[in-house]
Image 1 (cartoon, rainbow, N blue to C red):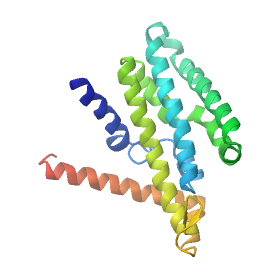
Image 2: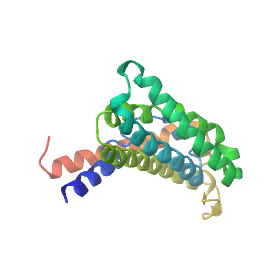
Image 3: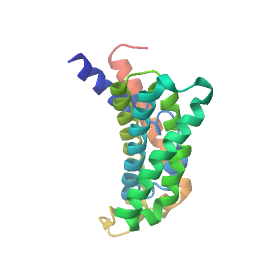
Image 4: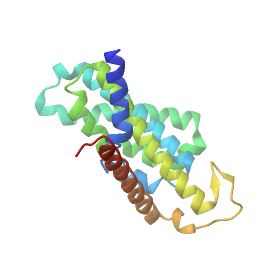
Length: 205
């Protein structure tokens, strides 16, 4: 039971208290550039989830044989390997979606959140814990992308997943790249408010 609880805490940590986008403000380029629709958020979120989990597990497996002086190049090579795998899979299975977001999939190699988790967690912890941490951070990133995509697609085009739900386009501003920063800022404020409210309800400082 203790291990199960620890695993769930690691997952919850990536989704809530250390959400890559809303709490750590990392990997903002895709959060702003591609999160114009829910589907874009889901697709890139799945790709990052896959790369984060498998990179974390790989580094944890080989952490004892990685020389400290080449750890960052090793992380980059590991991430690039898994990015190549997911890039080829998406190109073969979902060509239309891949055509719209292929460049962002390739940019996952440079996502700070993945390298950071390899350096701060996977290279020090067990394979099991690294798996759950990677899962939490990956899901947290995907949740962030989907939430941003939902707000921008609904308010920018009046649709969700391509289906017209409002019958009109409320605020075309939300389709523009600058709106990504606006939505991210609002969500950051919301997450901070939740944390403050929780601490106050528990009598914490």
